[in-house]
Length: 412
Image 1: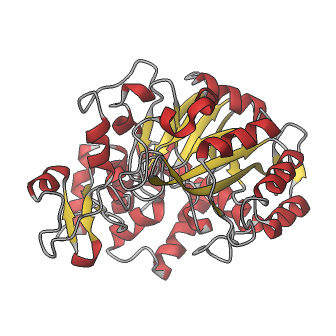
Image 2 (image 1 turned 180 degrees about the vertical axis):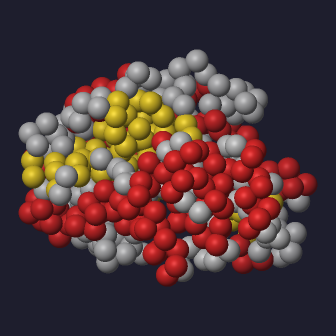
């Protein structure tokens, strides 16, 4: 069966998360979005783990269920440690097929650090040692390096990461077969590194609120079964892993370089011209994802490996509605219209991915329908994110009149 999965989220027990990040609200929003399989996130936190055990029904195949939505046991661990005289900060996702394995992982990790301090615990644990611990407990677990290009906390991060996967995971490297691209990069950027060809690239929301789940996700056509999904990821099976759903990477918080305090956004070229320093204050800029990819890449832009999994760049439906109405996405009118439109289509992904032009024009205001069509074609204007600031996307020009927008429909 074809289904959409979002494996990486955080619960209400993680810092800076919504109090609604609980199983009930996650299931409700997954149904609205059209997501079939969710990661639980945060299984290392004792209170969240108790909620998971209480609310999830064991399907007997490594997945769990609540209110018609399937869940996979996942967590994220932040490793901060010194190696060869340098400090590294790496985030890794752990996938587990059972509560039994989760309990063993938590027992072992609790000897190293305080798991109760945050849903995403910070441990002074080498990433290679984390992988060894997890795989020794259950070889069917998965370790996936999270948002691998984020400057401060990732495998390849410009500020605290490695240049090669082998340097990070050492003898555990052969057991790593999937990487999470993160919001600030898309697969095309990763295709520029030949060393990543053998890895399956996945995309997830890393959401801290229910409304943002699915902003990045994965589309499969296989059995809803832990071992099957693991096998699909391990073998990079294009027949069963259909594509990923992506942010436009420029919208990510670390796509370009820059200095947030000075409001300075720099392209990699501009950073080089300024010798890596902020032109306003002279301090070093935060080197973003585009620059870091450029540094490690051994292929030109536009290269596509033969075994690449396709992807589609999308913008969340509420942002499209807000753009069409010329208001903020937090507007009460946007929320009202969002739910009203979904009542006609069923789910958000039905609107964004599957509905025909005719169906969109029949059931949506013309400008909203045009917005969906423009996004599908990548016809958007983006000011890239930098140094922790999200990028800004414009689907419609500021001076674009409603009538002009309707005339533009002839283009699609």
